[in-house]
Image 1: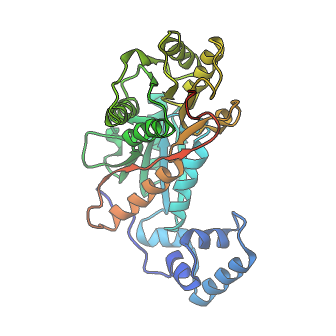
Image 2: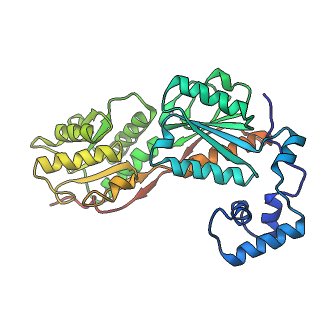
Length: 344
């Protein structure tokens, strides 16, 4: 495999960062002017860069080292989702720390467009590539990418040669269910998806593990699967709630399904969180802050996945010990207003 991500012998961003007492990302922002930073910090960085003789001549260095100082990011539908900015921002910040930039392309899930995207990135001689997915999936990496370093983001592969970064799906289920248990709920349902995807399996395992660890039985009537949108959430919510022995809380596979569960609760005359507590996954703020009451949820680490994936490309290039790895990232509980202790 061609390895073009090695370190440069010139004074680099990391040298400037160490001398100025700031992060490499701050140096990148100060030199490019791309983001607002403290004026005093910018002046200090510029003075240190000048003193050290730092000069980011990427084209000249690329000609000497065969590097293009460009990292590719190829996704399915990520660039047309609200998460795109966070994943791409994380990737860009990590690339900037290594004096590189990100070229991001989107296949919209079309195989021919993906092949065209691969050819385009290879034509641009990217130094490495992040192969990303909108939702956590098991993937087969295209053989056309065999010639360059590849790291998977929000995806995993049976091929151990690929490093990957994904959310810790079981931890999501454990934390969401654990939060509901912690405020006093013992009758907890789970609205999930019918798709056989790692996210569904991991979150359900976490849900069941938390319930059983609390010494409670899992009521299978309170587990319902449908499509992962508001319509599916409404269907799953009705299936779980439209019974005399209903749960007092529902953990939803994602925020869209949680929106549907809100609708199902309204259909049945139930108030949230008075009669029913609801928790989602994603922290899709177009939903979480629009719902009344605002939705408690588990935020997925999109920025962190983008940053980790690009950083991993450079770690592998530097031949760091145990460079190839499968990383599961912790996901943060975001408490809002849709969860409270059960009545009675």
